[in-house]
Length: 169
Image 1 (tube, one colour):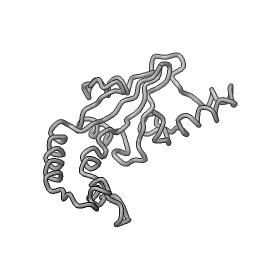
Image 2 (image 1 turned 45 degrees about the horizontal axis):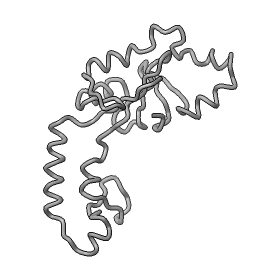
Image 3 (image 1 turned 30 degrees about the vertical axis):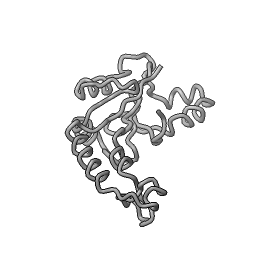
Image 4 (image 1 turned 90 degrees about the horizontal axis):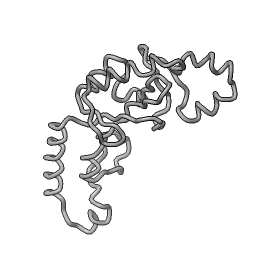
């Protein structure tokens, strides 16, 4: 059994986003062209292509649920560094976590300090805490490709077990 954890924006950030959403909706023009493209009239901020647009709702919800990682029984917590998009080491990870709110896959909110304590300590008292995986792979080489296909290859970042994959929820 495992549990995925996500960082969502702080309440004040969502309020700011809400204010922008309401403003954008009030400014919408009901032209046939706007209706046809589902009101996707806002140029995307991270696109090199000028013809890519998003709707006010897409802008409001963009990057509101960032996967942080997964807790699985018998394994060290597995962090999702999201290709270093939001954080790149332990210090920036902690800052990112404290700047928002933490929820699990069931929608339950967690105190950021308690979440970090749990994640940093998870699996440290287990007999098979997921490491050293190299010894496990030497004993069971047939499991390497099966495991890596689930989570990508693993690496250590500042003592944290991390996946190269961004899609291992």
